[in-house]
Amino acid sequence: MENKYTSLAGIIVANETLALFIFLAASLISDRVLPAAVLFSMVVWTLRWKIEGFHIHRSPVDIAIIIMVLLLPIALWISKVRGETFIQICRLLLGIALYFSLIKWLRSESTVRKFLLGIPFFSIALVVGALFSVQWMPGKFTLIPTSIYSSLSPLINDRVHPNVMAGILLLLVPWSMAPLLFNWRHYKNHWRFVLVSSLAGAVTIIILTQSRGALVGLCSIIILLIALHWRLGWVINLVFILIFMIWVQFYGYENFTEALSTSGTIESLGARIEIWSRAIYMIWDFPMTGIGMGGFKALVDAYYPLSINPPGSIPHAHNLLLQIAVDLGLIGLVAWLAAFIGITAICWRIYETGQKSGNAWITTLGAGLLCTQTALFVHGITDAVIWGMVKTAPLIWGLWGMAVAIWNLYGASRPKPAETSY
Image 1: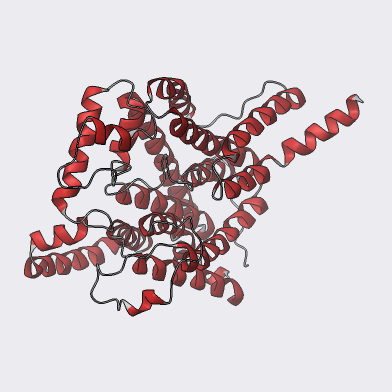
Image 2: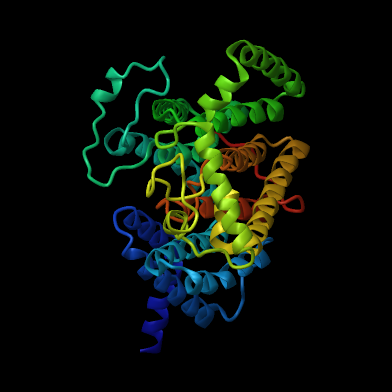
């Protein structure tokens, strides 16, 4: 009986990552699976301790993560919408569980390579799904004919906001763009086709969403890749920036900032500034605890009424850092920033290791990870699609877990993999 139990426990523990991804996919359809996902993760950790002992796989940002987790009971206690807060807490815990699971699972070069080759396929799946699920909001860019959107009517009731879809695809773009730029010659034709298709599809959907934040994030990825790939890349970027500044001068700075700040639900820069100001008021009133995850919409209507935006139309702060501070307080924001900076430092060290060793594969990994972090931060200035209420929010924790796993595998003191073709 004991052997059978141990064998079953071993199977469950060995397939933890797959199960968490299944839970994540199911949570896109219904939030009801999120508590079960958290419970499953707790069971797996208990079984792992039984099998392996109390050995914990450490990561460089453990303290920051522990602080965020310790703040969650306070967030639930202080919240005025505890049902919504509970769901968002479960979503955050699912992301953290995925983070540690990937660190443990991605321990071999072959596993890392297979996992990374799966990202373009996932991006293609999102692109196809976007054609039938996004609630398109045409009219922002006059260069895009509105007739295109008439053939892209959503086929499901639970529609996806275009800014959310654009923000998620933006985080995946580097994993098609960086391999094509840094490691093109090591890919066979069929893999090149997959990468090009993934990149073209993602960029097309981002353009169709007309998400300003995502388009700026896409430009930041391109600028960073140019700087990382060519020794004189900064000169190329400087030329492009000067051309851009000249264009903005002729177009008009006020017109440019107004066009950049508007979205499907926020029609002016003033409206967005109003939202940010309400978030700052909340942080001022609840600096240590925040208001609880998911409480922005209820509190802004009740205690911080909007004058430009209609009541009930703004569910979050439309800024990643402000939203985290609103939800978990300044302590939570500092913890999240510590995790972000720590992961970004790891990404840079991976890229630096690849450059010093002359290994295109490691360089590609570092460049892709750095671009993901850059896109996350830039897009987070105007939106918060990887936090809280957004169903795909755990994905960023998966990318962070992948970054730590890659550093553990290809760190400066470890043997470097040989160049191989795909």
